[in-house]
Length: 341
Image (cartoon, rainbow, N blue to C red; front, top):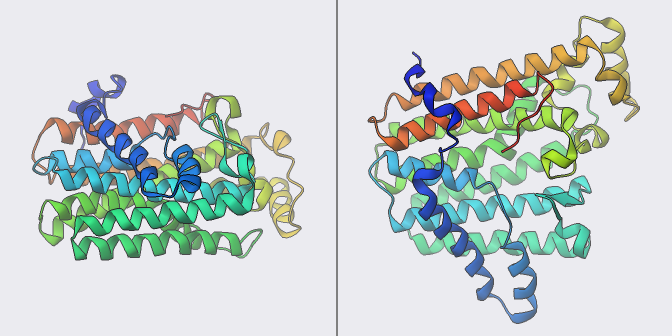
């Protein structure tokens, strides 16, 4: 099946326009969280809660809600909770990656040091749990708790498998499912649960979110190797420097050019020594990017199949547009002009 009749939407960039007002309410609700803290902590939390995120995950919550019966007040709270979990994970990521810039702004660790940044990330995570408890749906809270555990477990697994040349591609996919795709999945499935949809539909939307999250992480992996920092708005090149095995690196270790494959595997086994600038000039590098992009595109296509289960609506069209936008971002990695959200 194909959503070719949605192709006209791909260039309008209006996939979040349907929920503009609701997303603004989510931003305001995030900003308001700082008021729950004592004055000295409130100063730091206020800075964190003013972040200019892309709002992809809350957007998925709200569009899923709109496509399955309408946005309720609990969906606004849930979208806020999901974004706060994501924000907390970014604070911790930036500490681990020693990143100085995100969204063109100094990271918390760059501003206040690693120790305080970790504590603030924990505080943000705890506040998200408080917000979740106010929704009052025990099944949803359990799903969120499991998703949070997956998120943390994925980060632990990734951090303990640095420079691990024995890691398999299946293990890589499981790590990114946990550390990235789990929030995409729970965004869509949680919105469906709040609508009272049947379990089968909840799990179908959970699968769609997971597929999109995996695809998005593959894009991020490619961007880390290829992107221009000034365009991306964040510190790049940290994956290869820290020894994270990403999908393009796997394909480079399997390259038809034996010299390139041995060079990259040797660099992994010796914990460094990548000549990234030289690798970028090789056909093997571009082939690795293309193979990675192809794997992500196939997941986007599979994700679109789930949308046939929903009734036709502007919100379903917008969800489809998001998948095509991600296609475009991925393909741009292979033509030398990365597209950024």
